[in-house]
Amino acid sequence: MKNIGSITTDEYDKMLDNFKNEQADILSKIDDYDNYDRKYYMTASRLLELLSKAKLIFESSEVMEKRQLLNYLLQNLSLEGEKLHYDLKKPYSMIASYIKRQDWLRGQDSNL
Image (cartoon, rainbow, N blue to C red; front, top):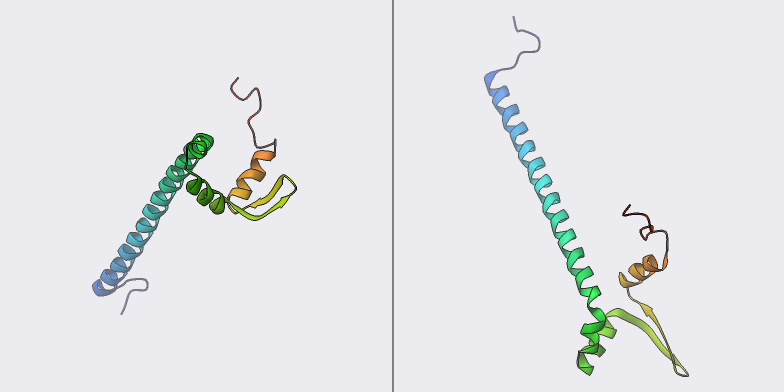
């Protein structure tokens, strides 16, 4: 007579292998997410550092480098009299829209 709910050693070993494989997959995914998160923050940090120096970099660049930078950042350029019109390419347009919004900035009392 077979006990209800009992498994053989082979069944146990197969289930254990499956659980260990699933655990390894999950741990690998967690590690991937951790690495992605670190890379994201490092990239964001470098971008903010570069943006803080953008004016200096642009002003000290050669004409061809300035042209390449503008082509990289801008689209739909047009000249109306002496006024230049342009659209920022993504993601720069999104960054600019956040900068224009006041509610994302820290309040004056945020360091109190």
